[in-house]
Image (tube, rainbow, N blue to C red; front, side):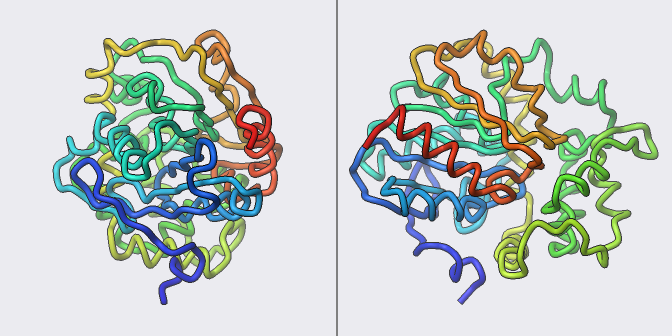
Length: 328
């Protein structure tokens, strides 16, 4: 049995939106609005293992999919198959498969970007939204890749990801090293993120990964079994599916010009992580101006991988909010 299968509920599958989606489900089906947990990069539904267990213990219905391009879910070849229309459409298809009218969508990292788009693109399928680390971001005045290139330089990881095949190969060359490099506690990530690269870029994770000594076991976040679940999976799938999400930043920006700019009448929760250097709490400033029903919470001393780093605190915040806004 794989490390993933040993640590997760039985996997389920659904034909949705032209792909085969793998997902995990816990709790009493059909009782109230379920929570759909959406992971980021480079992650899996496995990233939500602690939240699934907490929801099951609390009698809450919860679902966590491996999203398009990841894990046991299909990995289409075309880059354009990973744009926001497809990513949000997959979640709508999952609700249709489950026979659910509306869900509370909870997203971390890239999953957070997707769930904040759900009420703009599919408002009739949303009961509520929870952003973990990732704030609701207003549409930029210019192409975001162009803006990131100007501000951060060519080696900034999102700009680097635009180059076909390059980051894919670098991350897949030693998956164990890649996952241990990323899945570290905040002190280590802070060391890797802000320094300027040899070309003047910031957030030059590619250079930092190449230079990192794999024998450094300090600041590791995951247990050996947890790390194995990620490593075994990404050794099988590679990283191209997830990187293709980043390759649609410009396309998504172009196609979002006519979307709503506010979220009104929908319960929303923003959970910030005090020591996340990639998605800092300051990025959530001003969300109240464009979301009419918003609560905020801060997880102290947490870095970027908040649901895995501080699971008890994240679970407490989510379940308290659910009990108040969506009582059983």
